[in-house]
Amino acid sequence: MGSPFQGPLFLVLCIFIQSSACGQGLGTEPFERSYGATDVRKPLQKTEIRFLLFRSESDRLGCQLRVQHPETLQECGFNTSQPLVMIIHGWSMDGLLETWIWKLMGALKSRQSQPVNVGFVDWISLAHQHYAVAVRNTRVVGQEVAAFLLWLEESVKFSQSNVHLIGYSLGAHVSGFAGSSMGREHKIGRITGLDPAGPLFEGTSPSDRLSPDDASFVDAIHTFTQEHMGLSVGIQQPIAHYDFYPNGGTFQPGCHFLELYKHIAEHGLNAITQAIKCAHERSVHLFIDSLRHSDLQSTGFQCSDMDSFSQGLCLSCKKGRCNTLGYDIRRDWSGKSKKLFLITRAQAPFRVYHYQFMIQFINQIEKPAEPTFTMSLLGAKEEMKRIPITLGERITSNKTYSLLITLDKDIGELIAIKFKWESRAVWANVWNTVQTIMPWGITPHNSGLLLKTIWVKAGETQQRMTFCPENVDDLQLHPTQEKVLVKCEVNSKRLAKEQMSQETCAKNK
Image (tube, rainbow, N blue to C red; front, side, top):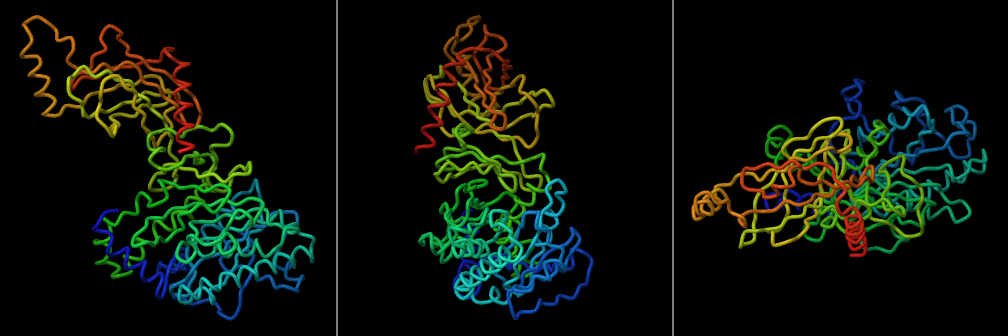
C-alpha cells in the first residue's frame, strides 16, 4: 500500500492488540437503517449466547432456539429435511451487529432451488470485549455451538454432515473450535472461514485456530493479509482444504486509502476503521456474490504465490487445481490443502475472466527493448480495446513472455488480436535515427521487433489457442504500428508442452 498508508493502518492494528481489534464491529452503520426500520440503535440483550433461526428472507429478528427445549424447533419452523447453515459474527467494537449478517442471511434464503435452514449465533456479549478477551471467548463460544449441534442431533436426529458453519473474522475460529469440540463421530459437514482473524492466531497450532481437521470440508477466503509491523488483520497462513487469496489476499480493489482523507471530513476518525473494514469484510461480500450471482461464479486457481499467478502460469484445472469460490465450491478435496488465487473486480458481480498470454518476440535492436504495448481482443460476443501490456522485463533476443490478462466481460471465444507498439518519444527517436542512417530506398532489415506468435489459454474454459500475424510476409513491429493476429495451428504441441512445464514449475515453486 505504500508509506502514506502505514500510519493509519498501524494505528488500527495497535487497536487490534491493545484494546479492540479485528472483526465486523469496525463499522458504525446501524443495521436497522439499511432496511428502513428504526434509526435508533438498540444493543441486543447481552446475557447469553443466542441461537436464532431466520424464517424468511425479510426476517430481521429471528426466532430463538433454546437447548433442551425441542418445542422451539417447531415454533421457529426448523425443517429437519433441509441442511442447516449457521452464520457466526466476529469481534464487535460497539456491541451492535453489522449489516452484512442480514445480507448474507437474505442471500442464503433466496436460493429457492436449494432451501436451507439459516441460523445465527449471537455471541455479542462475549465479542464486545478487549480483543485478547474476545479471543479467549472464541473457544467458549465454539464449545457452546458444539453443544447446541449435538442437542439438535439427539433431539431430532439431525446429522452433523448437514451442518455448514460460516464464520467471519473471530467467528471463523469460533467455527473451528465448534468443530474440534464435536469429536470424530459427529463431524460437521462444512466450515467456511471468511477472512479468519490473524492477531493471536497466526502461527499457532491447528488446535488453537480453524484448521482442516475441524470439519469434513473446510474452505477459507483471505482478503486482508497485508502485514505491517508484523501484524495483519486477516490470517496469512493456509488453514483450510481450499484457501482462496483473491487479488493475492493482501488488499482488495476499491478499498484504497486514497479515499480515506475525503472521508475523514465526513466521518472523522471512523473513516480509518471504515477503510480497514472494507478489505476485511470483502470476504463476506465475495461469498454473498457467489449466492446472488450463481451464473457468474468466480474461479480460483492453485498456485505457489501471487507473482507466479500474475504471469499467467497457474490457470490449470487438471487434478483439482481450480475450484469455485464461495457457496458452490466443489468438495473434491484430495488430501492436500491447496492455495488458490484469482483476480476480482472492485464491486459485485466480482467475477473476471482470466487469460494467459504467451508472446514470442525476436528483438532485432542491438539493445534490450522496453517498449509499451496494448492489445485489442476481438471475441465472438464483443471487443475489448486498448488493454495495456506490461512484460515486467526488457525484451531480449528470442524469448517467449508470459503474462496474465483479466477481462471484466465475457467476450466469447477469442477470434483475433490487434497488437500495437504504443509510441513513446524515446522510441520514436530511435526509430527515426535508424531510418535516417539507412540508404535511401532500402528498408531496414534488422531494426525492429519481430512478433511471431501469441499463445492464449482461457482459464475459465481451459481452451488453448494460437495466433499468428495475419500478414506472414511482414512480421516486423515498429513504434505506433499495429499488427493483426488470427488463429493458426503453428506449434500447438510445443505450446501445450511449454504451458504444462510452466504450470508444474509454478505449482512446485
